[in-house]
Length: 176
Image 1 (cartoon, rainbow, N blue to C red):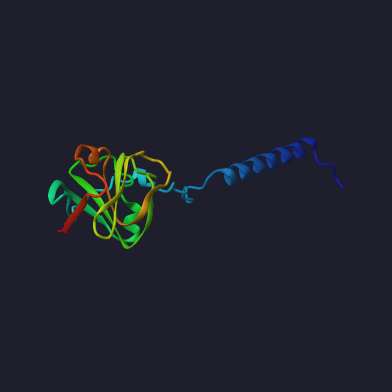
Image 2: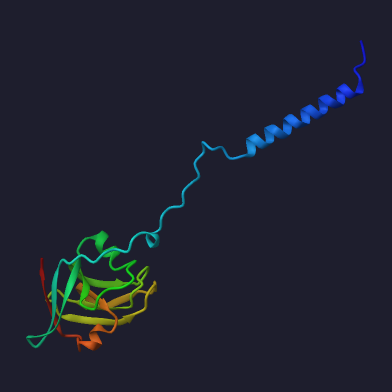
């Protein structure tokens, strides 16, 4: 058996070391074929929902019209859940009418709602049973109706004060 020169052994070890480093670099480097996981788009990054003019609502006291607004209707679970969330503003001449199938104790919150609101709860005969004035934006605190209600109207905060709308007043609405 012949002895291999030390330089040949040292060269082999160096070559092996270089190959190990190259393999490590190739394996640890992200492949251009792999796609990066994309961050899910949040509702805040999407376009602000646009107001949909579904009808007209009148606030009435003693058969006199106090104020008239354009309304967007929320009458199914998805629309009621969405409500006015993610909107940055709303004209004072607009609001949202939530319609429920039956009279029941209702409770709303302001999660993901940037606009301060007056939340008006109404019974099946369209009479106002309670008003939660100046509801705080982005709050997850429950805002209960205080009694059974079937309809809810959301308008900009202070709307009820400015228009002298109180418990016992009534609404009428027509759909487009």
